[in-house]
Image 1 (cartoon, rainbow, N blue to C red):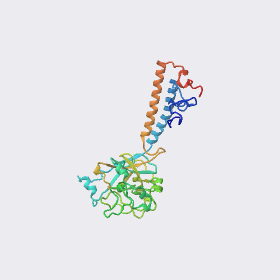
Image 2: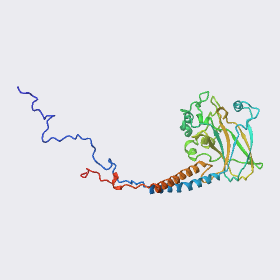
Image 3: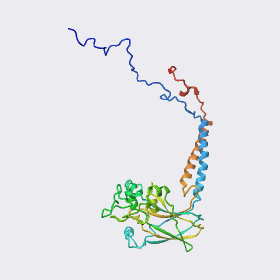
Amino acid sequence: MMNSNSGAGPSNGGSGDGDTPRRTSRKPKYSKFTQQELPACKPILTPKWVISVFVLVGAIFVPIGVASLLASQKVVEIVDRYDDACVPPNVTDKLAYIQNATTPKTCQRTLTVTKDMKQPIFVYYQLNNFYQNHRRYVKSRNDAQLSDASKANETTLCDPEKTTKDGLPIVPCGLIAWSLFNDTYSFKHNSKNLSVDKNDISWKSDREHKFGSDVFPKNFQKGPLIGGKSLNESKPLSEQEDLIVWMRTAALPTFRKLYGRIYVDLKENDTITVTLENNYNTYSFGGKKKLVLSTSTWLGGKNDFLGLAYLTVGGLCFFLAFAFTLLYLIKPRKLGDNNYLSWNKHPAGHAGH
């Protein structure tokens, strides 16, 4: 009896003349891309090249640093810390004093102009030791609520300032809006009031895109805790520029925010009388409050760091160029043959590819 499986098909293990040999090598197909042999700029860093680059960088950075530093030095600033000075001397508990809503907190300060100040004069408030970059603080807001009136009831992520005691949604909700700075300043110069222009103190993009013109404050500062400034419920959020400036959170614990502008020239030795309301509580966390009057230049406000950084890098480049020059002159080193560099060699074994 014959086996029914015999001769049924080709053998799996056999190999005839027509069989194709299997590829067993894992070596990838040669290409200039995979072997990193594409045309490229491969400079040879000779001593002359290195010295020339350092001199060039130094020649660019040093003038920029000098110009930046000179521009910063032209800025005139008046900085006045008032958080301690505006507490009556007989008060021992500053925290209780600032939290007492019935206690008058009006304070007068006299500032002396150290140099001529050309308009516009920028008015800032500065806070120290205030961490607006804290994770819970930064997240405590609802951007959809701020920009769209139809989403006014959305208070997700706004803990713990989401709703009032009665469960009504707060607009704008969140800790950032709740802690809005509420000190106020008014100025007198030569017995005349100096008006502070508070228009266009915020970013235009914020006013037009992040804060809706149809969104109005609702139930604000009516939650379990009263925070900072109250808002005018008849004005849309896009016009509440103090709020918009405050809600662009600072990255560092010491920061300044624009309060307004004064369009009057001030002369050296002029005196300015400032009447302020010391309302904002920085005593509970050991913070400081300062009033800043400042001019500006093409570089902006006073910032010595940028100029010093450019000068430092430029000076370091000049020093390294000088050091390498001395080393090259005192102990020169003969360069090798460039033909032995790997990228100057023809790749062997690939003539057929």
